[in-house]
Image (cartoon, rainbow, N blue to C red; front, side, top):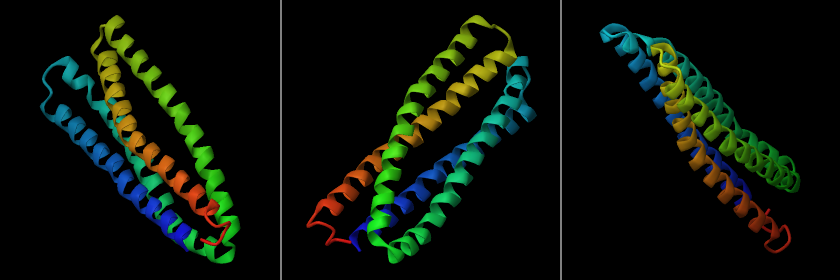
Length: 172
């Protein structure tokens, strides 16, 4: 039963964390609207579309993860009730797979930030400068939220392994 509790706590923490994608998306939408309404310079006007696109992407990520993890809370209980050992095994496999995916994220996102910074340096047009700066801002948001999610996933994986190894499977 302890494994189910740990799994549901992890899913609830993920639901809370994904709200930050939604909050940042709203901030990007507000900034886009602000530049659209108040922007007087060519650079200010150039931010409207990139900020809107970044807001849509962050909102999509946030809502997708929110609903996925929200539904996991109930799915975990059903899967655990059906077969606790299979649930534990599948969760350990899923956490290992997800941790490998985070490794890719933490390698790719910094490369995207560097490319966006190079855009700012070498292409001196308002549109590309706005795209570069907005991309960097969005990637920083992703690193912030995914960094905490990665730490939670590592902790969750360790807890699962500890519980499964503790007294055989008596904790199930």
